[in-house]
Amino acid sequence: MHILMIEDNESVCEMIEMFFLKEEWEATFVHDGKEGLDAYKNSPDKFDLIILDIMLPGMDGMAICKEIRKESSSVPIIMLTARDSESDEVIGLEIGADDYVTKPFSPLTLVARIKSLLRRVSNKDSAHADELTFDIETEHLKMDRTTREIVLYDQPLNNLTPKEFDLLFTLANSPRRVFSREQLLQLVWDYEYFGDERTVDAHIKKLRQKVSLNGPQVIKTVWGVGYKFDDTEKID
Image 1 (cartoon, one colour):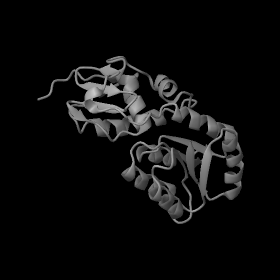
Image 2: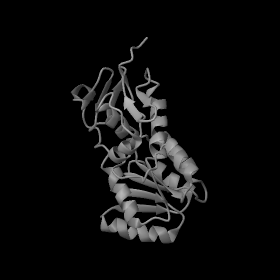
Image 3: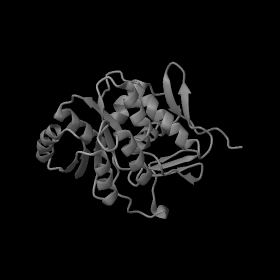
Image 4: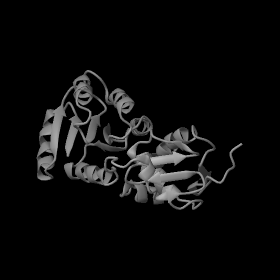
């Protein structure tokens, strides 16, 4: 695995590099935002995961995340945010980041987050569409977890981030079952955010915006409880 880490604190990068080496992960460290974005754009297939600090010289992490998402909706992105910076966390998730880690952080925590996120990254699509066998088939939705193929209301849905895909998969795998935010945190993120329900809400908001382009809304709110998947609404 090759990680691109865009972080201006060289001491932090040197420390993190030691932990990456223990995991036998290769990494490219860039200390300027614009140079980091150029490194990605010059070799987009080189990197399996991107770690982005928000405060960077040259170009900030939010702007970099937006630019990367224009190029790829699938490469996993972890953002580094200042402690208790709620707005940064929510905005980062809304513009396409898959996870965030607050500073100061333990290198072991970052490694654990990377492993958790990578467990949910699909294998590269090597099958043809007519050879697909779907893991989920509801009235209007088909999803394949291996190829990340999604068909909703007879139209392909291709622009979900890895975490948005996993969230939709979890909900759709049990149609009309209501999941609390705490349950979704554990099932989708594979660890607890210690009650940080903003993570779920931010992803639900973006997921709803994307799936609504294909037809009636399938992500329903059950007030006071949580969220559910329901695609039984008839198309006009």
